[in-house]
Length: 109
Image 1 (cartoon, rainbow, N blue to C red):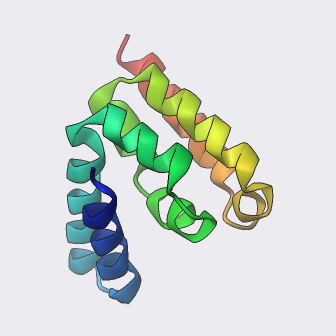
Image 2: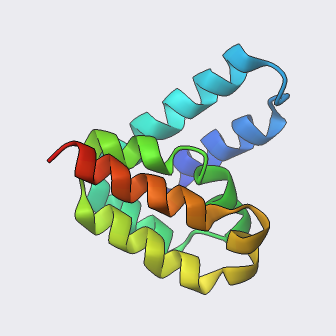
């Protein structure tokens, strides 16, 4: 299971100053790699173990993961988890991220 790996990556990202572009991009690359490696494991994590805070941090890379994996199941999972955390989604505009995820799938067809 990828839970520990994802959580370690989120911790790194949370500790990285948003103004440090290089550091943020490195964190994003790591998260994209972890989440894209095995989409089934990623979906299990998101649906069962992911907290609202973790969901908000990971939302920074959801569209990249959707584009890389071209996984409809991943995007459907994001909608499902978003319903679990409506306040977080509203606060961080995650609904907009989901639109970009849809677009990433459509652009690759």
